[in-house]
Each structure stands twice: as C-alpha cells, then as structure tokens.
Image (cartoon, rainbow, N blue to C red):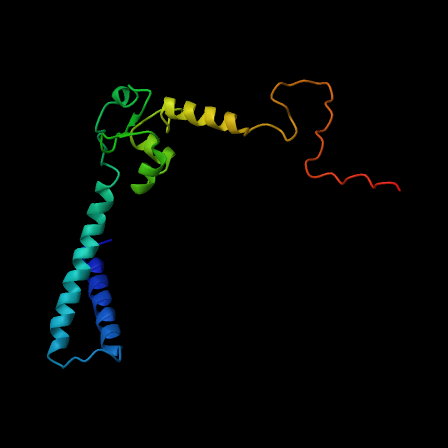
Length: 167
C-alpha cells in the first residue's frame, strides 16, 4: 500500500467517523467544533494505523523469561514454583487461569515438555489416597477384600412384629 492511498484511507475513515458522530441525535455541536473534531479524529486514526503495524511486528518477538529455572520449579515434592511469578503452588491450574492461560499455553510459553506436571507430587498422592479411602474408582458392589464367595445379605434392621398370641 502506498503512502498516498494510506493517507486517503485515513482521511476517508476520519470523515466517516465525524459524519457518524454528527448524525447522532444526542450530539450537540456547533459549526466551529466540527473542524477541530475532524482534526482530532484524523490524528487518532493515523496513530492507530501506524501503531497496528508496529505492534503486530513486536508481538511474536516477545520472549517470556521464567522467574525461576525449570529445574528449581520442580525441586520440591510439596509444591511447584510458578515460572510466571516464582511463587509456590500445590496446583497451577487456578493460578494459570488467573493469568488467562491453559496448561498447554503455559508449557508452550516457557518451552516445557508436554509431561510437565500441573500438580505437586505429594498433593497428588494425598488426593489419590483420600479418593481410594472413600471408595472412588470401584465398581458398585465390589468388595475391598475381593472375595469371590457369595455372602448372605445382612438382615434388614428395624423392629420385628411380635408373633400373634394364640388363644
């Protein structure tokens, strides 16, 4: 795109925006305000058109530097250290969501392997043990002992009616 066509597009866009502003019934402007508003609109549009090309070229070039090394982030079994802010967390998922990231985006941003953990090892083990203790993961009716022989069903609880007295 040449400079002349870019300049024409900026002028046309600024003019269209000014016309739209003036056609709004809630806008009250005198004739002296219109040229000043048109100049302001032209400057704003030209700044936007020049900054978009610069911002687009800067975006991919930005590298994220981790707060700590990957080795240090995995040093403890009790917590993971975030590469974003260097703070310890038992699980990174909520922390990443607060920064607008998914675990895959986080791994990609810092060049981590796909198997980089999102939960601390000891925390994961504690959750696993608790789930087993309350019986998650078993099929209904399965026994803990795994015995195959049939066991009689327990007698129903409750009051039994007394046998009728014979006269």
